[in-house]
Every structure is written in structure tokens, then in C-alpha cells.
Image (cartoon, rainbow, N blue to C red; front, side, top):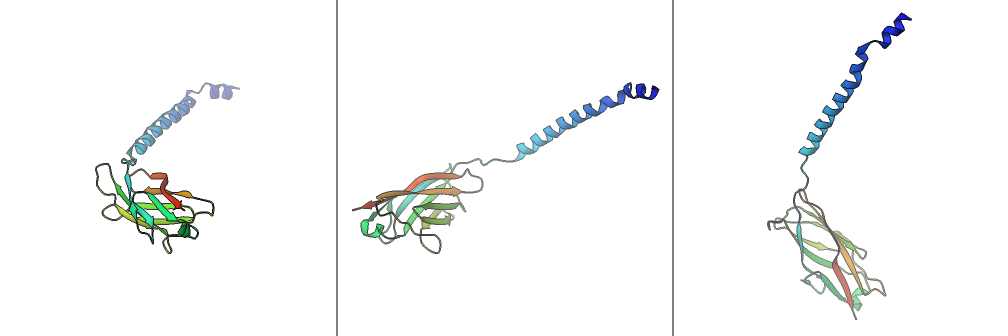
Amino acid sequence: MQKTEKLFDDDRAIELPINIVVMLVVGMVALAALVAIIPPPTKNMSVNIVESGEQSAGPTAGNTVIVDSTTANSPFTVDVLVSVVDPDGYPVRAANVVLRGLGGVATGTTDDYGNCTLTTASPAGSQVSLGPNQNEGSMDLTISADGFYDFEKAGAVMIVRTS
């Protein structure tokens, strides 16, 4: 019985919970310091659709592509010129640009001037098509670059059928 009393009267066991709490606090401080070092993207991109158009008709300024009923009845190719700059007006180089919608897809990378020409034709992408009773539709634009927040715009390019 004397051994049992000695076990419960031992004050050394109190050190273990205190050591665990101290290690937990030090670990949390170290983790917070490491997370604070990671730099978040710091800039937004400014995106401008310079010109767009159906390939055989040629591009026009803006983000609207006008196609006639004859062209709209079969898959067609759309060309879009996109310009990407940072908040200070400097070009964003090597940004990945994706245009998709209406069955068409186009991908590209911005050049040294921040420009990218997207073409929805093989082998780089797939052609656009409007349904038989569809008079308009839109394509979504997504752009990503290192050091910038991703840019996403639903309905960035409008495709309109004329009679």
C-alpha cells in the first residue's frame, strides 16, 4: 500500500501536460510564421478583347461575332484577339488563355506584348456551332498567370446569328 500512496503523491507527472501545452503553442507560432511567408498573388489582370470574328468574314473590333444563317448551320471557326495587361499597363507574358463554349474550344499563351490570338479550329481547338433554333450564344474566357489572380469571364464572347 505504501507504493500506491507514493505513486499518487509524485509531483513529476504534472510536468507532462505543461510540456505538451508549451510544445503546442510553439508549434502553432512556427506554423503561423511559415504560412505568413507564402506570398499570395498580388495583382489583378486587365483583359481586353481587341477583336473577334468568324474566320472567313474576318475580325471586327469588340467581343461580338456576327454570323449569317448559312454559316451558322454548320460548325465554323471563330478568331479572337485578347490583350492582357497588369494594373500598371505592362503586358502579362506567358499567361494561359482558354476560350470555350458552344462546342468550341481554343487555347493559347500570351506573347511578349500580352496578346494572344485564339482560333477555334483543329488542331488547336474545336469549331463552334449554333443549334438549329439557337440565334445567339456565348463563350467563356479563362486566363491564368503566375503572380496574378485568375481571370474568369462568363459570356466574354457573344455569337449572334443574323437572318
